[in-house]
Image (cartoon, rainbow, N blue to C red; front, side, top):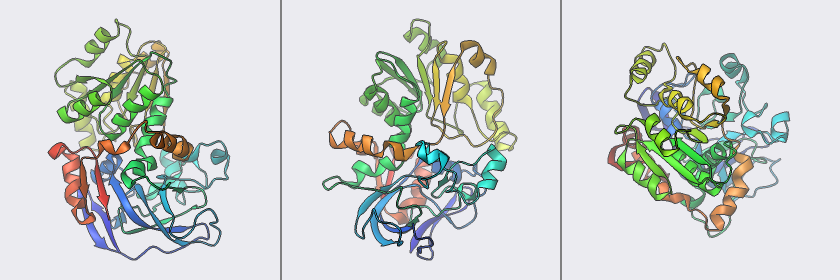
Length: 388
């Protein structure tokens, strides 16, 4: 089969690789119909996530048709059209039983590597380094899905791929980020980053009762889409964000702040230059420019939610400010399984059509060029979907 494979920093290629096979009786094999390039994939592309190996198959947002099943998978049938959470969960461990699916104890065969870095291992993930299991991803013609009796969800008739594809990751990620803020009716929520996750976070915050959403970015096309999603916007290239947020909130600050940027944040201050230099020299793994600003912006007693991916160590964090303000932090990989049915219902009810964020539809052969386009935000690129 053909698959998009990682070969090093800024080097992905479409290779011919062996077809996946059933390795465990709880496995399924999917023929991919649609898959997407995620902002998190750029962290791999840029070489910031360790334990990648040349030839690793990328991709964790995918869906397709079941073409083969292990003997213990009773909830699916050959020919079923399914979406698959990007986090892999066994369904029976301490964490899965508490719906903390992305903390599954049994789905990462390389748990000791992750535990050495993070103190404990999260769940395995598709196409996201050997530290998270070394599982082949879905930017390919076929993919093996472990624990297929737990993760995949059948797609109801009448729904297009592009309406449900983002249930695999970014729609639940945006929704959980907003839910983590414990939004009260009328709250003001500020969101840093108007990429795909940020856009879904805007819509989710409004669904959950936010009175105002203020979105922060520097790209005109993203800011325009944020406005059309219901947000007020700030261009951080044109204004002092902290001053602007104080002005917009009567000097108090937003009730909740969401970091939908993560480890490769951009900025214009001295701290942004410091982070860029240290990350380039590998003296700091992440650039927390946005996160520092968020801590300083959030009101006393407020909540900070972090769906943006961080991979390791960050410097010069204003922890004293967070302590002094009594801030609550909530973060982590998305418990996707928890949100599949509730968010599918919102799609079916017409509350949201997630396809509105798609700007580019491509073939697998066009994917290497699309990574460059997406990384550099060329051609007003917000979301690329690979269709088969």
